[in-house]
Image (cartoon, rainbow, N blue to C red; front, side, top):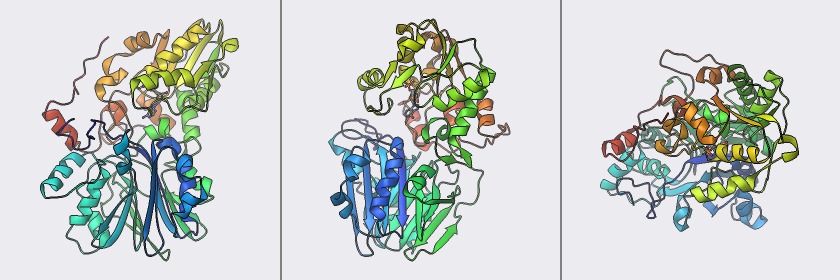
Length: 489
Ligand code: AMP
């Protein structure tokens, strides 16, 4: 167990922070709508789910390990959550028995009454804040960084809850999209840089907040607008909405990886269709890294829109050369390397009749550890492909994310360890190329600014982190991180 990191469980397992959040106020079937909304956000976290509701008097909560459908498909589960206000959370959380206490929304009885919080993102100074709070006597119930916010709200000296909330968030660094419930209503808030997404919708008289527009679609809500970076929106129980900007208006830096991989393609993000952006990245990739081949084949499903764009731009036919089983979860979101390796094989199978004797270009959205690409290239060769070229619809992932996308530590990122030629040899491809960072910006409809203030958080590709990383700096000072990774050529 790592004693200097209070966010590790007793078994040494570290919480990951991929999440989706959903909240609704003013609807008769608030909990059922929340379950439906979370179901549409299931891709953002598949290990645990929780919903909290409020009926004007009491808060009710139900949490479970596993998918939304496993935990909230029965009428009796929803009946445990009465009231016209509810919020919920899906997460990729720790494994093991202690997991349930980390499942959100987290809830506390504060001096001002009940307080429930659902958080998407990752606080980059949570360890430091937690240590101070513990030294002052705070007793933590979970190993989730989100609980730090609850303790900061509880100990703030401001009189009203919204002021305490802002006071707490001023101490917090990193990424947070939050949906909170109090006896007075709902508060939705996005960190000053707007790193993680959060949108607002309307369903009749009800107000809805969700990580992605796809969750609004599924419950039949109309998209109103994004919660702006640094904005705090309060909705009273009678539906009165007020907007506040307690953190000023620094230039926003939403996460560009949401466009590359994380968001669902049918969502609208930062005003752009995720699907269209992914196709544009594929087209850009074809312009930058074209290759003579017979077929363009997506690594399903994450590479499909980019492969369509690549095929259209290059004129090479698009074909489904890999068929995916829909009964296996995402490859990445499994706790151990062993499970991940077995999953790749169960998940994908070569369409041998199509691939045999062909020169193929495989398209995937990203390479992280290289596990998937190595297996897929091998699978194509086993199926008789004559040449296997690999094209990636993002720049090399060279840096870890500290803002809520689960990435392994830097030493496990293939692109941090190897240059592109060495990566190509590692995955055994005939050639390998990535879209450039400028090309990626072009695809999201922006020219990348080089004045030190890019429009997105692209830290996983560039190492340009838009906030301080206090915990990382501290761990580094203790010699616990191998940030200085030597590349092999
Ligand atoms: P790897 O096998 O480690 O190289 O992972 C690459 C695969 O994982 C790609 O097919 C991506 O679609 C997917 N992927 C990339 N980043 C993530 C993430 N943060 N969470 C889950 N899956 C991811």
